[in-house]
Length: 293
Length: 293
Image (cartoon, chains in turn yellow, purple):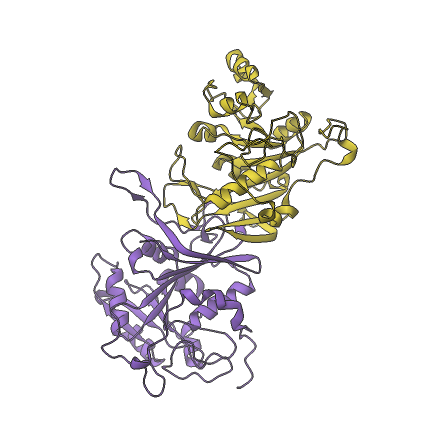
């Protein structure tokens, strides 16, 4: 193994054992090819395994204000995010997160592809040499993809897979498509029901048809609140939330799903976790669970 | 020890050991009288030890909507609340909580005064036979004290101390005062700076002058957000928050302190915890800490 680059994250697998029950299943042997790569056979399920993840403050905020990146979690839970990325085929974020944070959307664990090992594409989650596929939900084509975007730079450097951008048919343009394809990425055109709003079932179906068996949804607030809504939460297989011991204060970017009412019009809990495990990591806590049906 | 009544809470002290570093100090021997009662000597500090406690959802809400009591925490953390009450001289809530919940504001741990032991008044926190003093912040005299209020009923039954109600001088009325005094309680008149809004320093000073060395602040949202504000947080000695693995959804009663800005007008974290300990209890988590200065 080559010497890991200085920005790789040291880690110990045993620290993350508590996450095991909440991780996507490994590709079954019958669908795995001889070279260990995931096959795109007819046994691919209709929907990838969906893990919803985010890091919030005690007052359930992701950021101090919209468009501002806020460092919430400590070093221990930062490594956790990258460990989770190593266990998924893909990472999904809304375009707002890309515009606000210019994120890397790769796995920087020491030993990952590009971080001490050569990146081989495609490979299977959990293997070294591996990187998850960055996915950007950008229905209206708001992301002015640029060669200097961090995601594209990392892809060129062999430290990330190139992004796939889900965009409404009406907003696909050739220039963006060429730039993405130039680094190995692409635009995935998708029809939206309402203007600029994809249906989550359509999103997951198209990801599945592209061979992705698991997706880690990382944000932002619109994406998270959407998946926690009464209509969508059945699509979520696992939830992993990090909470930092701080209050960002009123005016921040809030995670709170839509209000839910019962048959009599009374408010009821919008969503609840089952099979709950809380684990302190550094100063933060991580809560894992599955959504109650 | 008499047989505990059916609504007493079974408990095991060892479960709560993790709370020890965050609890108020025991009364010092020099201030304790021979009979073990707390004295009101000149060694009483200017301000009682203030513990801020609340139970919220993952989306930092106390209730589904204003005025509606919402059961959030499980049996394990319910016992924790009563354990904390057993370690404080007094419990403080805003009048909104009294109007919405008609709370008992006593300690129902098996063995507490009225729950397997006779209630002797006054006695010291941590002792059996003990109950904390219920305190209601009611600047405008909104609480129409009634004989059938749960707090008064419990006091008459010897299962709670009678409440002290902090009310603005302009809103003290004889009828309420008589009803409270009839069960051993009283109105504490206090001047408010703005109409109907006490200063926290004044509140704590008057509590201290009444011999209270510790106060557990339980809510509601207005009281909690006030104490977490930049101006007041130095008054808080310990914070103990229970989080239930559920999202109540938009429109609920939110804990989020006032926005805080730095010298350049940029938003910064409103409050943060230091010396943090997270502990899973049942499905919930409890976080303890002290506010960073």
